[in-house]
Image 1 (cartoon, helix red, strand yellow):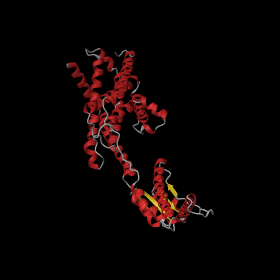
Image 2 (cartoon, rainbow, N blue to C red):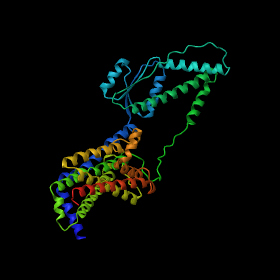
Image 3 (cartoon, rainbow, N blue to C red):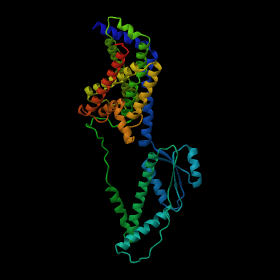
Image 4 (tube, rainbow, N blue to C red):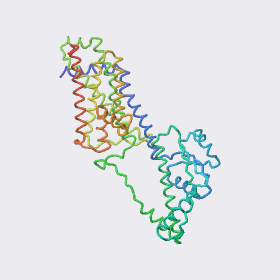
Length: 425
């Protein structure tokens, strides 16, 4: 027992003496989680809370252009800047110069075109119902199209969402005009308001429900997503410090000198693992503490911990062991410190990219989603998401535990084989 504590103490002293390594393992993760969460929260707010700046040029001589603008105002989704004196051919240039992302042009004759189209449809219905004898076909006026401009840097799915909102409001306007025109043609114009009101009241409602296993799980937000994800990313980056340390001790002969001492080499490796697992747990503690107490102070959502504390502790522990085991593997097989640092860092970025840390895995192509199953960061993230966002149980964590357990065993076995080949063990 004394040898164990003595070996752990030596590893702690080596760790404390590495100021750069400590900064990478503690300060950098805090800064990373802090910055990424702020950026992601701003993105959430742009989509869900903030009004979207939009330039609008309304050249319509009728009332329907103003009706559309009224609906856009009332939606509280858009912050509209009116530029009615601007010609259409100058709107694109104005959009790029203003720094805004989207613009809408309502052409002249917009109301007239809508009324003509509605009138034609109304006459067709009246003739089909036998309520109108005149079979003369009326010529429909050309429907002037709305013009939607967007900045080239705006993502297609975002601009498609905005177009969908505008299209839904156009549907409301056309429906109202259609009802009013049909009732007018049937000399029942005074009753159209009642039908419109009734149809608006009877619209199907959509209830938004978070599909979690219990009601205690917090509503998903930027903090719940980003703090666990980037904490995992930071944990695995200990490969830069631990991997380089292993290579240095192999190259300078420290491992060989240990063979001449009355201490088991496996005891030394166990001490390294124990120290760095504690470091990884401390990383989780610090970053999660920041999510609970610091982020709410600057207006970000508070991190809500899962209620299943034993499962939470198990996921933290096995994720920490996976990170340490991978760092030992890189340190055992790399020939130089530069190789350990370079390959280790790049491989973690790749694992993070295909594992859903940088980009959610559900938006990836199918073959990339399959590849994500081979990333340890994916399974660590899946374990945290099951607990933080889904309120999951031990049963749902079984595949996470199985994959990470196998990954740890493979890393440990490959590390042992390499050290055995070099006759260090």
